Length: 219
Image (cartoon, rainbow, N blue to C red; front, side):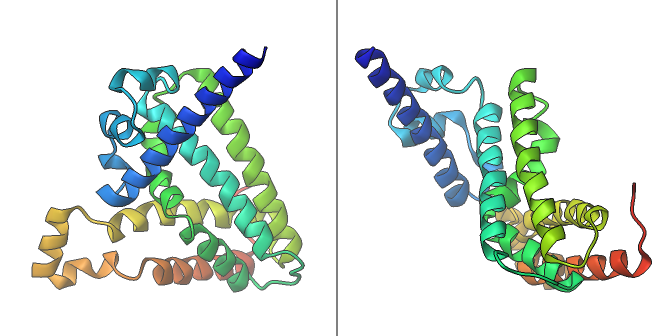
């Protein structure tokens, strides 16, 4: 039993090494779209064939990081709003924006999860991601509803807007090297790629004010 426990502990440690390597590479290479399994295994100090013992694919590995990102966002947001009450819609929007932008990897992954990651893994892995991300989502919604003046439905609509805006603006704000050179030549085209956090806050605050003023919800 002791040998098996040590074996399980070693397996968990290697899986963590791979996840840490993928996260580091995403930051240094310019986003998760540039991460490859070969680079991850090399950075983690493992043989290229070893990764399949821990993750069936690159998509499964990145989906694990997205799942963890949701839990991190939940923890950061609930800690930030501990004891808060009566937040106005703009303050609620600011709390969402600031805590999201504190997690650059999650901001990046928000594009890739619906685009490729969750659809390219097995159904049980997708089920686990959905279950755990929605657990975090529910806590986030409940926290924002309890601490602010927006209704539960309005908060859900606001989070939907936040996720879509973040996914789009993050990619614009982190262009490929060729696009960065193009923006240097044509600064006017780079306007949407500037001021990621400030733009996200402004747009989300306007959305929050609109939702609260009209009282319209999607449900």
